[in-house]
Every structure is written in structure tokens, then in C-alpha cells.
Image (cartoon, rainbow, N blue to C red):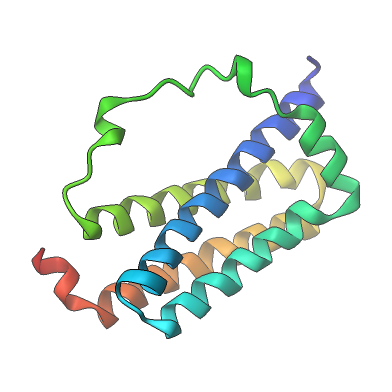
Length: 143
């Protein structure tokens, strides 16, 4: 596998990681806390991310580069399997999404600066939304 394919593989993994983290938090506020304001905010961010992955010039490269069978990081870590409560799930998934958006931003700087800017916007939207979440739900700190 050449370096360009590996680059697309890393981007694909981080788009998926970011989307999954956002969706987890979104569904907690949709189904458990029934907070439509936060659900909509997270959904908007996730849809921005979906637009990145749907671009024709990337779609084929990302899918072609995907190689789940040889992913060295897919083994289950028992620490990752444990969560104390919903606050922990929310916090961990915000961190996952922010980290993935940073990786995307840096790697897209090599491929497409417009997409790198979108990735940066997503990251800052996640920073603001995470803060808004814990301000809006201060009881999450008491669990």
C-alpha cells in the first residue's frame, strides 16, 4: 500500500470515528435527555462532516483505502469497554470526535485546504457544543 492510500485510510478512519462520536452524543440527547436543541446542534455538525465524506473526489479514495482486516488498533481494550455513567459516555465521545477532527484537519492540509478548513470548523463547533452541553446540563457533573 502506497503512502497516498495510507493517508486516505487514516482520513477514512477519522471521518468514521468523528461521525460515531458525534452520533453517540446526539442520540443520548435525542432519546435519553430529550433535548432537541442539543440534538439539532450535533446533527448539524454531523451533517457538515457527512458532506466531507460525500465529495466525489474523495469518496472513491476513502473507500478504496479502507482495510479493516489489517487495522492494528481494532483490538478491544478493556478500559475502553468500561464507562461509569452517561456523563462519561458523553465526555469520551466528545473527545473522540474532537481528536478525529484535528487529525482530519492536519491530513487534509496535504490534500485539500478547503476540506481542511471545514474540518477545523467542525472541531471548533465541537468545542463550543461540548461547553454548551455541560453548561446546559450542569447535573451531568453530579453523576
